[in-house]
Length: 186
Length: 186
Image (cartoon, rainbow over all chains, first blue to last red):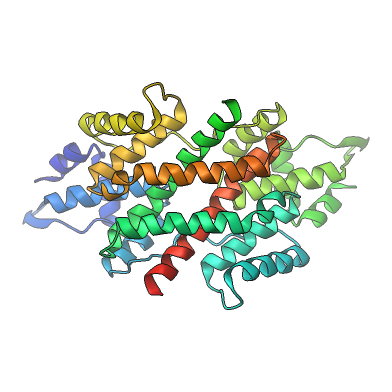
């Protein structure tokens, strides 16, 4: 199909499609004339995925590029989430690291652990330690949720891992929010 | 304290503090001279909260304004999350609405429900229906998580509700991600 048809099939305007091509998020079509290229169903799928990651997943164009690069390379567990750098004191940061390592074991490391430490330090700095007191309960529920995620993606497909993590997070947050509101009002 | 001290106490640059004052996120200080105002510990706390919502919660300045406006008005459950509008077909949208109402009951409505429908429709459009097949399992875990949230904020404080929802979401996503990676590799 032509670019105008690709745009029609996905509802994504031609200038946006061209932008994704330039940014390398969308692979080029097969050249079919001096100023024309042919696009396939695979392009339709890819465009829908890009759009879902941006609109639903809330990723920036650069983050979509990184995430899709990891998927294309077959990484089943792309690292998600930006580094979190709240302005907290060293004391709060050290205290938070202690709580997180207490929970996860002394060997825990990496960007996700660093983000957890930053979130816990921020909660302490703001005086909202109630969440931290129940860290073990949240961790147990997160493990149970990850078991469902693992069952959803038993084959360890990279794109499924990405979509499940990102859209699954939005889904879970919505369900949690609804349950909380119902619990409060009902 | 003066603005320079407020900046020093929070690590937030003076131009950023001025910007938050102009945007109305930070209440003005008490005028103490022709070109000077006095700020309190309450301003330090508020600045830290703004920064946490932006850096850790990922909110835009406008979203922080809306969220803090709700907190100031004493709303214990500010609506979170932007409307999600992925380009999905009406058929996928209708199918998704059916699944969500099946789960939540025919009376379910509102912006959070609309977002859930949009996420489910996107998952179907992308061909990742595995997540949807386990919607009831995710919903049960989300309810259990919301019970912990409710216990954390038993008094129904508006700021606690906001911080718990937003930072708690980041915390849970990190714990879930870690558990998934460990489960895959271990």
